[in-house]
Image 1: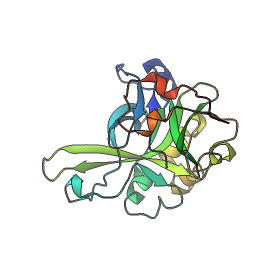
Image 2: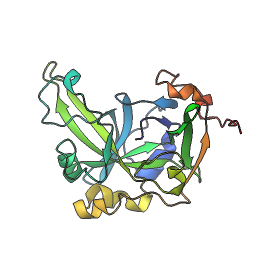
Image 3: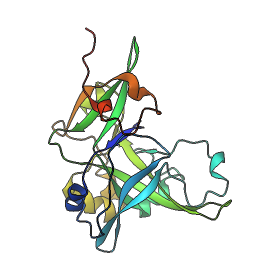
Length: 227
């Protein structure tokens, strides 16, 4: 599962990558983005894309109970079942979108406990993760809540050294196929990233806590592991 990531990109980077047309936004760096917090998602309407804030953890539009009654973790949607599970099926069919991230954390099981690793692009560019979204009306407050889930798949060799899953990473030439293609065309993109796309390094175990400061850039610093 991918349950933590970073946002350390500029408006100019994502404006150029996604060809956004909206006014510039102030994007503060975040180095410990956790599920249920607000994340950036790129949504396409007609021929324009916009960066929108969403809750990371999808709430389907048909959910009628209070949010506190949702016991399932919905921040990840598995590629193998996304087209079948009621929680994600309609969003996969009709509401596919893009999530920009700078990198993400994954944990390896070791005799000394869980060791976190940081994954990011080798070329230093923004990572784009295949995502689905929905809009839910809170029955208690009437608030409209946009929410999303990132799509995960099996690992490539690099990721498999740490974990059995990885996010579905899209290249720029794949964006339109993911956003507007039919379900078969979208499904064709839900593969592990090429071996030359990512790099990884171990980081301090401070990030094992979801309470680690969101603005602490040192969370992604490489550490030396004991031999």
